[in-house]
Length: 173
Image (tube, rainbow, N blue to C red; front, side, top):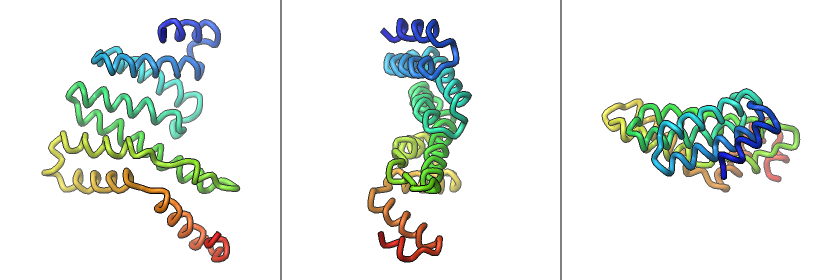
């Protein structure tokens, strides 16, 4: 099904369209679940690359295939490579939240850190033997904190941001 959808999207829109990226990511995830690491890696990398070219390297659409690539690397026994993908996905999620909070009429409440990239980063760091590396332990601790961000925590962060901006009355809204 996904192969036909990919072929149709490529015929209809060309090789670098967002629909092509979506189908590649679907194929990559399916191959990941089947344990076909090379095929998954190729499809997910191409899908992530198309999304980064179309929307920019910090766009929300780039993080999900990176998380899937990290999962492929974990399953393939490459936790360092997995950590790099999870780290990058987490950076994108954090940047997305920061951008959303700075938009007029801010939509920070609509954008949040999924926790998946952060939790998987902790796992990847653990698998690299990170418990013996103080820097890896610190990074894992920070990622674990991000993974446990709650709606209440986001509300407090928004309150503090408004207060720091010098708008006390707005902070209590």
